[in-house]
Image (cartoon, rainbow, N blue to C red; front, side, top):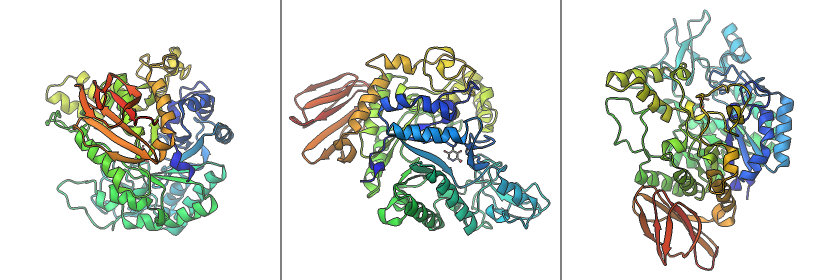
Length: 549
Ligand code: NOJ
């Protein structure tokens, strides 16, 4: 069994975890100081969002130098010390591998702009003439995916994300090899795996082809995602990595991949990835949406039945690979805000529901406290024009600016990237300085307070992760049980052991029949009479078969 089949991953957003040098920005040394906390939590792997030299247009996903640490995060010596200390503590390390694009400040792009004859011109995707974009494709960050090159060529360059993040040209074998060198450099430093950022986008359709649409520009997903060449170009990279570093865990971010596509990326004989993170894991109930407004920033509850359908497809459809089990990450609102009803009981039972399933838990720092999105001021969103537009649209149909901002704060990913609240002290012990992102309020929950309380969300996560590490919950088979739509229940089974995990996703109590008769870990109001299990509001329980644990 590969080590990563037992991984419990903790995602650290380094800017927001712990600031050791008092500049208001989290750093590598700050992470190192918190290793005992990570150990006590019960995770065994960390994934760090990008820490490389970057102008920080997209919080580090715009890399200007893959081979050096951004000065705000520390130095290469800090990184080496952190890797060694994590390993010493029995924790593996995954780094973000940003392979679809670089920063426009990357020397390759700067050289590419110098002349059409630059050796690096073909590392990027230049096309069109007389300043006209070659097609109608849109960027994920809004507007056209093309920007006129700041040179005399008349060409434009492609950027699926920000204009300051030009896409790399994976058709070019030299570029492909150069990206392999980047991976090798970090694996040589001893890291244990890579999270491949946006890898599904490295292949693009014919640039001369518009995507049929009445709007321009248009998100041309079928032209820019999951095309066959993605696999063709990844395979040699993966084979180079795996032959030199066979234990490496390759975790791809496959945002829009559906189950069959994800299965193809992770099939054991495909020579590609070990696991993928898909964004198609959730289902929201849109019924309460105000149809006069865009759906994007309207908070929505979980749609239990559709959510179960999504989860069971991932459980059933991946073949050998393990599903990645997560509730949130830096690209979405925090789970306690999205689905948690601001209620610690719900935070606990959602964790129970998700992480005891078959698959690899991937926690987002702070969720183990039941941490919520920040209540940011409108000025925090200055770099995202979609926010001002939404607030304007909401005001036009009668919402106050405050109400509209509250909706944004509950749904926006930026509000999910707040500093980790360690103590009740200045800036919650994150930094002596005002943090880089802050709503100016004292956090409702802190690590020190939760460490002292036996019934805290943190204490529950610690117990839950211990249970997750047992063979039944790591390797057992899973079967979703037929229950009321609002009850999420499944059975795990391994050799002579079996357990049912049941969670009530509604505020009204629910009863279900269980063959098992020993109640283990429980959350909220749980009662059992013989084979009848009753779960109160958002309650959950693990029940094991009599005589078995
Ligand atoms: C996915 C990352 O998770 C996201 O934060 C980033 O903006 C894009 N990839 C571009 O790198």
